[in-house]
Length: 81
Image (cartoon, rainbow, N blue to C red; front, side, top):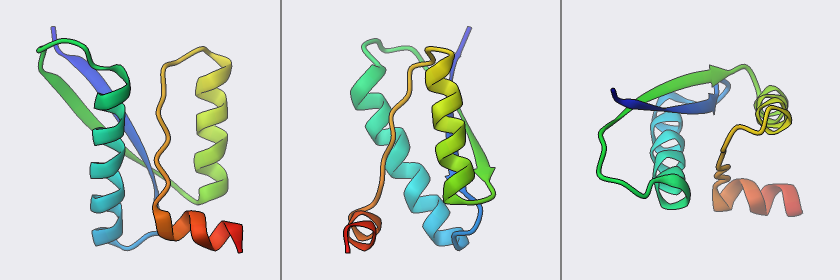
């Protein structure tokens, strides 16, 4: 049985940005959690905004669901300013 990786991405991003953000998120998740050679399904889910995305991450944490968050360098710089 294939395991599943769910990727939640902001829906207020352009299509190319969603693809890049999703790719980075999967890469980070594999680095953080995958220790086997099994094949995985990847499911991408769009959240309406960054606020909603953070809410989903918090909900996952409350249920002790393994998760990895990736924020682009541009977003980190913008939120630090």
